[in-house]
Structures are given as C-alpha cells and as structure tokens.
Image 1 (cartoon, rainbow, N blue to C red):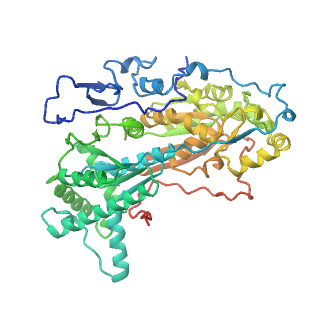
Image 2 (cartoon, rainbow, N blue to C red; image 1 turned 60 degrees about the vertical axis):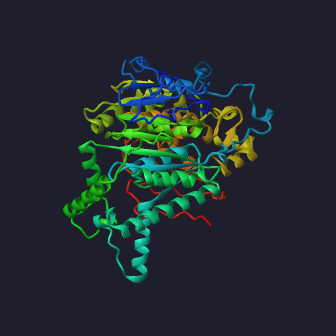
Image 3 (spheres, one colour; image 1 turned 30 degrees about the horizontal axis):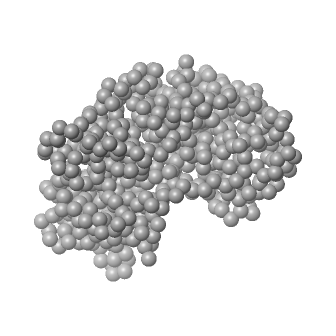
Length: 573
C-alpha cells in the first residue's frame, strides 16, 4: 500500500527556539534543574537539544517518537510524515482534494472569464540578516556545508553569499603573481601559529573577509557565510564583537566536528586531487603530506565550540550527532532544521517524467489523463533501465497522486511512496486546455506568463513559485534519503533539477525535461554529477522555449561538481 506523506504546505516556524541557559557551559557545567536536556536518536543521527525555561520555546523532539513515524517501521523522524513536517503541514485533509477531471468543467468557458491570474511577489526577508560563521579544522567539510546551505537558502529566496577566506587568499596571491611575478608560499609553514608574520597575514584576511561580508549584508543581503576555520575562542569572540556593533545583524556559528579517520582521509584525498592551486606543482603524495602538516598546525590551537553566550549548531561526524544552542527565530530555526537532515553517504537521485500521457498527445496541459500506448511501453521498459543502474542497491520510488505517474511506476519492483506535493503545477481554469486555446482565449495573460513564467499564477491555480514552496518538504526528505527515483511531472522535475544544480528562477521554467528519459544526479562535495538515459520509445515534445520577445535569460547555465578555488569577490561599494 502506498504511503501518502502529509506534508505539502507549512506555516513559518517563527515560534521555534532552542536555547541553552546563559550561566551554564554545555560542555563543562551541570545545567540548572529547570533546564531540560533531551537526546533523541533517529535512524541516522542523534540530536542534542538543550532548553531553557522560556515559555515561548517549543521543544521540537520527543524521546521514543522516531520509530513510530512511518508505517513501514523504518523510524524516520525527520522524513515525510515526520513530526516536524507535520508541524509544517496541518492541512492534509484540505490537500486531498479529488484529482482534477480530464477536461475543464463546462461552467468555466473562456468567454466568461476576464483575466486568468496574476504575478506572485517574492517573500520579504529584508529584516532578516544573519552572519553564519563556519568553525572547524581543515578537511572537515566546512565549504561543503556552506555551499549546501547556500543552495537551500536561495531556494527559500533569501539573498545569500559565501565569503571564503581561502578564496580571498588565493585570489590575492594570484593577482600579486600576475602583477609582480612573485609567487607566495602557501605551503604548510604559512599556517603555522608560531609564525607571527604569517598569523598576522591570515588574521588580516579573515578581518577583510568579515568587513566585506558586513558591507554586503548592509546593502540588502539576508545571510552571509564566513567560510573560515575560526578555530579559536579568541577569533570567534572577535567575530561576535564586531557583528554586535551592527544593530541589525546577528551571528550564528556553524561547527563541523569530525574525528572519523575514514571521513577525514576521504576529504584529504578530495582536497589534493581536485586541482587546488596551493598544490599545483606538487605530486599527490607531497600535497597530501603538506596538507596533513597544515592540519596539525590548526590542531595545535583548535578549540571546539563551548561558549555559553553564543548561538551555534555543532554537527558531529557528518550528522551522526547534532547539537544546537541558543537558536532563535524563523530563519535560524530553518537553517538548523535543514542541517539536521544532511548526510554524506554515497547515493543517487533518479528523476523521470511519467510516460507519455493521452493529454501529451493531444497537446493539453494538466488533467489526470492515463498513459498513451507509447507511455505504457515506457512503463514496461523502465524497470530494466533502473535495475541496470541501481544493481542490487536499495531504492524507493516516489510518485504523485495522479494516475499517469502511478501507472509509470506500477511495474517497478521497489517500495513506493505517493506524494501530493509531487502533483503537477495546477493550471487552474486552464486545466485541460491546449496552449493555442489559452492564447486565443486570454492573449494578454498568455503574454504576461511568457514574460515572467516563474512568478505568473494561473487563476485558481499555481505559479512556479508556488510549486517551489510546496516542494520544500520533498527537498528536505531527498536530502536525508539514500537512493530515490522520483517519477513526476515537467514542472516538478524542473524545480527539483534546478534545486540540485542551483539554477536561477529565470532558467527554471525553461529547463528541457523530455519524456521517456531518466536523469541521474549524483551529489558530490560541490555540486552534482549528471547522466541522462533516454529509452528509444518515441514521445511528443512538450518543451516550450523562451519567447524571443522576452528580455530574460534564454540559456541554461552549465552544471558541474568542481570546486571553485578563487570565487567571485562580491562588490561592496
């Protein structure tokens, strides 16, 4: 029996706060009697939550609850249908409306309607300004986390920028070499804390990066990430003191702590084999030796987060345990919740549209039409294609509630979940019409949608922006799952694809997602690798390219999983 997750919409979590008592150090002191500490284990991680006796604070986690959250017994507390997502979505009964008919109701004739929709405005985050300061030794995944967090916050339509001290250091060294021919020495000795001159240079870079970050936030940004080791209490106190001088800004520290030798070795191997210019003229063996020496220099002064007066999230061993202290407000809560759901285990995300439907053949949009004859051929051929790629690994298949996705998945021999959130973009009164019929009946609205397809909302229906909002629980679950095959619809796959490849709103509605094609995304440290498999079964094309009359972008940005070692230096003046 298919499991239907409850989460498809959610109110803001602004009333959620996770706090620690100001007088007690979480690592060294015994908390007062009124402060409660709860440790909750899930299938993949342990969360430590320390709460102060504040009436407005809401405890997110309850002991022994995780294993009861899924009817399949896998105990996924943070997953689809989990307790936290239920807080985000208390409207399951409203979402379970019957599937739309295959043709428009007779009482909605185009001639009886003047105007079919309007544009959706961007959420206003202008009052939310956070400095996220990374903490951790080299090769612990700081840049990985900062990039993942950036992608998620941009999905929420926050203005986000990463200010990476290493990128600033390398870009300055590159500019100096181009100007004077002098090559700076950035081998392990540069990172020795016993070298006063090198320490002063590194401190100056960190401060310059912080000042650029603050200037960017004051110009209108929402979240600025200070990507550096910030490995001592004195450095973190400097950051906190500087941010405190800006009345509109708050700071949240994000520490990634890891003592797992296998994870550290894998991160070091990635570092020395991915084109880091610090090791451009070294063999891999020499580069690894030098990088390990750099780590030793930082280890000699490293102090893990224990400061009782600071807000921070500590992620231990790639999410096996998460500790949160003094988390306040909507955006900090969203950040903490997202970080709790990440993992680094190797996995792939497969995405495919349903097989060709009868409405596809007829050129109609929306509806709940069955598969065409060629669509049924695709459904029959899909199991072998998936098996050849997944081999004996576990896989879960997700579909929408519409029959064309359920029919496409019917012959796949894997567990299946049905998501209301994966239903196609709702075309409202245009459901079941062809684009030619829409253009003839509503020429002004048809043109308006072409001018701003992401924001345009059908009357009685949705915009792409609306779809992005209702897909957030799906995104959260995809981040914490292993191998998943999503059988969805054109707009849905476009949105998911754009999230994993960090594509813009202008690009999203025009991504080409052809029928009878499986897209395989493999998350890497700094992006996703992509492969496409097209079965030799004919299908109509439903892709509508961007009209030439529009001034928006018409090309899709290239996607790759390579690390950027220099980065752009955001303008602040």
